[in-house]
Length: 160
Image (cartoon, rainbow, N blue to C red):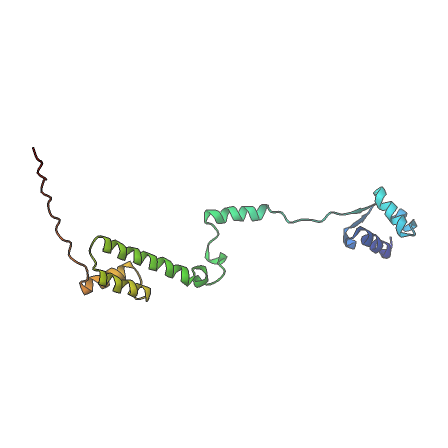
């Protein structure tokens, strides 16, 4: 079978030449017009081979593994540690934990208002790396108030 006819068939089928399958080459050689070729397509002498797709099975499998926490080894990583753990997110988590610690100390009555305010602003300024660093600073400066001994409540006298 000559190639020009296969090209014409490919144009009619709107696909590439490699996807055209011819079962009876003699019938195609005898066809003269495009209409003759269309008739052969209708009869099933010439067929368009379906496209091959990519299976989703492998991607589903890998996705399942990733959800489990697998495939996180050194070879699977793209980007530096800074891109994988953005600065801003780590900053937010540190500042939140430090502010929570200050709030707890203030609620327990171990920090005065002025000290709380000063330390809060220092946290905002990025002075402390961690909770341990903040507590060390507080200890060194003797900022914590001594817990006042709780007064014993006297039983209320009831009138008889």
